[in-house]
Structures are given as C-alpha cells and as structure tokens.
Length: 117
Length: 113
Image (cartoon, rainbow over all chains, first blue to last red; front, top):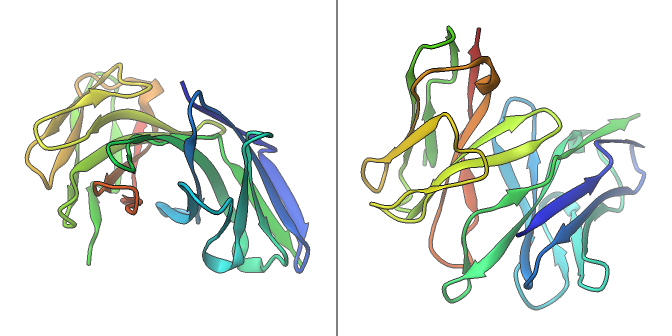
C-alpha cells in the first residue's frame, strides 16, 4: 500500500528565502507523485506532478520538485518565497493503472507554509 | 467553466440526522471522488467512482454511502450523522489517462452537534 509522510506540519520562512517542503513516500511499485496547494477556504490546486521521464519537475508559481527514487523523496522547493505563497501544501501519491492513467490519490497530512516580511 | 460544483457550502446537523452532499462536474470526466479533510490528517478518501455505474470504498468509508447517479453527479450520504463526521468534504473529478489531474470542488463545511 502507498503512503506519504510530510516532515514538518508548519514551516516558516522570510520573504525572499528558500522554500523547502519535505515529502517521503512508500510504494511497492514506481509511483506517480503530486504536490497540491490549498489557499484558505478554497479547494486544492495542482502545483506539479511526476509521472515518468525527467525527475526534476517544474510547476506553477516558480515551484519545482525532484523525484529521488533512492531516497523515496519528492521534496518541493522554490528559490525565493513570496508573501502570496502562504498556504497549505499537500504531497500525494498514486499508482499507475491502465496505460499511463492513475486512480485514487493518497495524501500526506499537509504542511502549512507561513511567509513573513 | 464551473468544473466541480458542491452543494451546500455549509451545513450544521444534529447528531442522528441524515443529509446528502451533492457534487456535479461539467468536464465529462469518468472518475469522481469524495474526500474529507481534518486538521493534521490531510485528505482521506471516503469513496470513489472510477466510472459511471461503479463505486468503491476508500480509506474511511464507515458511516457513509455514495451514489453515482450519472456521469455528472456523485453524491455522498450520511444516514445518521455523528460528531466524528464534522469535517470539510471535498469532491473531485478526473479524466482518464495520466495527463489529467484532479479538479476539486470548493468544499462543504459540515458541523455535527
């Protein structure tokens, strides 16, 4: 069975500083990996995903993540934090099914990012 | 371009009452999902429907039932609400194939007193 662990329920950074949100996964087969962002009182929005191919994935709003199979990790980074990045971030894993498709997502507990001036 | 629409947005129930959360999507996607979100626990899958006419249990199905009424609609029913079901509920839809991501609704905030 797949599972996801996000290290740190709260992360606080200064505006302009590096953002690093950690995600480790457990899966018996090569997984599909995702990062979602949730702004207050809203649904979830996809930031980026890894399915196959290049292990460094670039997403929206300047975020990127690197799939490291040997470390079973998929950490999310952004070189310079902006105040608007303050939100909750969720890492998720899924298994490939049916010719490259995937089905149910299993989410981590989430990391709340605070950005201060 | 509504995507996924959930109703109601807010609801307060008394213990033992029943209600149905509605979800509709206009993207012609095959798969639909119900998640609940609780502080410190992320989103947990309640039920999902991989295609019209099929439903399957997720991680936390107890106390819930679902109906995939047609391709557009996937409802979640609480037959006898309990305080432990106080949560924010999200519906999502997804197309077939790896290129598609999940599209989430804006959520239903349910309080059971």
